[in-house]
Length: 189
View (cartoon, rainbow, N blue to C red):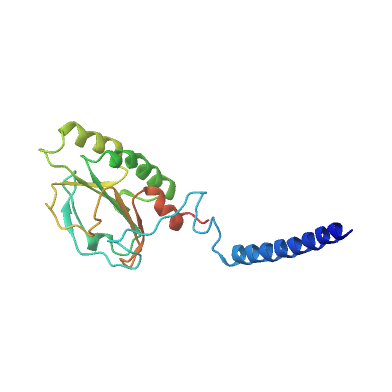
C-alpha cells in the first residue's frame, strides 16, 4: 500500500511540474515574435542592406543609358523608383534579371521608374554576357551599363545583385539582395 501511495504522490508531483512547464512554454510562445511575421507570400524577409537602410536618402547621380539618354536623380524625383545593381561577372545577378522584369510588369512600373545599373568591364566580362543582360531586361527598364567605378551611383550597395526601392521623396523604403525582398513593401501581406 505504501508503494501505491508513493506512486500516486510522484505522479501528482510530475503532473504539477508538467503544468508549470506547459504554462511557461505558452507564455514564451505568446510573447515571442510570430514565426511568419514580416513574411510576404510565405517568403522570409531579410533586413535591408547594411549600406542602404530604409530612410536613407538617394544621392544625386547622372548617367547615360544604353539608348543614349541622360538620366539623373532629378528626373526621378516625385516617383516611386526601383534601382537595381548588377555585374555581368556575377553568376547570382543573372538569376535576378527576369524577376526584376516580372516585378516591373506586375507592379505597373514604367521604364522611367526602374533603373538597372549594370557593371561590365571588357577585361572581366565577355560582350555576349552584356548582350544577354540587355536582351533580358529589354525595354522594360532603363539600363545604364558602366565600368566599375566609372560613374557616381545613387547608392553604395556594397555587392551585387542589389535592389533599392525609393519613394517619391527620394527616401529608401526597402533594399535587399533579391527582387523578392521588395515584395514586403510592394505587396500587402
